[in-house]
Image (tube, rainbow, N blue to C red; front, top):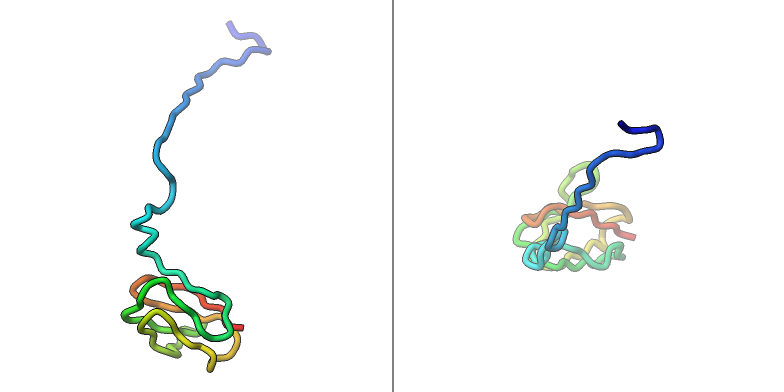
Length: 93
């Protein structure tokens, strides 16, 4: 019999080993950009074989190949980089 002031139940405790997140190998295969925001020249952590810079309307403005791009001829704003590494936002001031 359980009275009004008693609590009954089961408590299970589990231990999980390892780390949460990306492994060093996976982290090495991600693309980052710096500086971001930039006044024009953006550097990439990986070499891009084939990429494009798009505006927010989806129009292709430039092609990207290598590990940097100069956007100093574009207006201030947000641009998208699409490449084999995925997509990133670039902020040009």
